[in-house]
Length: 202
Image 1 (tube, one colour):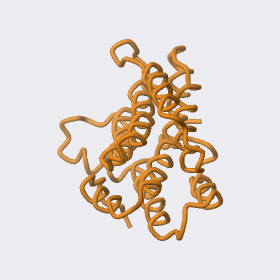
Image 2: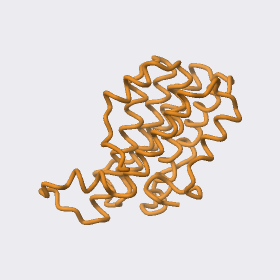
Image 3: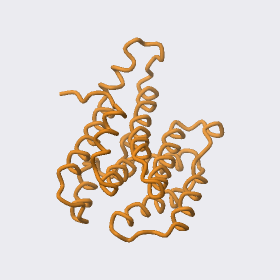
């Protein structure tokens, strides 16, 4: 059965019924699938630094594991992650937008640590699907004026896999009695893609 198209309003409604850490965990799991996209951009463009992006996401995981980072640590991580984001006008790399999405998604979660705004988590999931959307159009040579464009993107295996994983993660979080370290580790491991990103990049 094909997954329906991403719907931010539906996702927000479901996330809004969950606690802060549950919302954050869903966003962190989405971000894990985006980090390798930044690595591929870095290799392809010969520019960038994945370390601050990884460290920024690790701040979120630390919070989820009850090792709350200080406000200053969160601000520093945000600044470093933003600095690592490439300017799309400066690079011809196929992966530049995906790298931006990875940085901005992680920064959205760091912002959530200050504001507890569910829209920040919805934005993370949006970045994840947007990355796939653009990448699929590029690698498949899709015509932007094709009246079937959106349906073709939705039916693509990469988009279906991302949507399926988002649904699986959200459902598991909704049903879990608690966010134990074992549970979070299990959800991380549920992405059966041998460490590759949501774009199938190593």
